[in-house]
Amino acid sequence: MFVRTAGDRDLAAIRALLVETWHATYDAIYGAERVTEITDAWHSIASLKARLAKPNSEFLVADDGQRIGGMAFAEALDGGVVMLKQLYVQPGLQGRGIGGMLLDEIIESFPEARAIRLEVEEKNTRAIAFYQANGFVQTGRTDNCGSAQSAIPALVYERPLAA
Image (tube, rainbow, N blue to C red):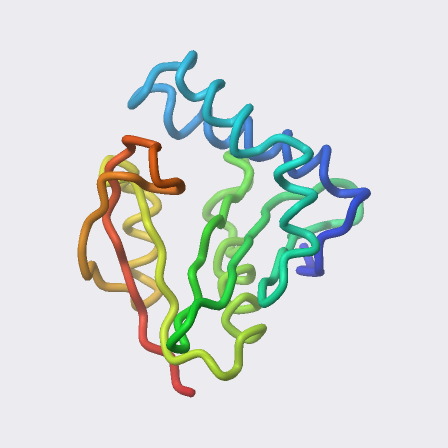
């Protein structure tokens, strides 16, 4: 796998990856129907396309020339903080270093950043273990992960960066 900037031609594959990954991760927590509602709202082609042109952001994919095996999206916030909004690896490819490659490239894309922050569902123990292994520490919680009205509680993790 190699990491590159996402483009229009990748959107259908990214959406498929997100739907598969969300169902594999969250069906047991929220139920398949709620996960479908979330993925339809948050991971529609239109919503993904809007991220391609978002200023002060980076939208990446891990690609092996045959398929998209992972994706990441982050944006710079005020105060030198980068918010990692998404980092997902296809379930069958997890544990092979793809997530680490995507995370490293996101960090390199924001050389002036002083910290990187993310929100993670507290029952997503695999993701929490991944982020902790990559230097993140819990700094708080939110009742609305992803959007102001999501009603999805999450833990907030942050990692300082050398600016």
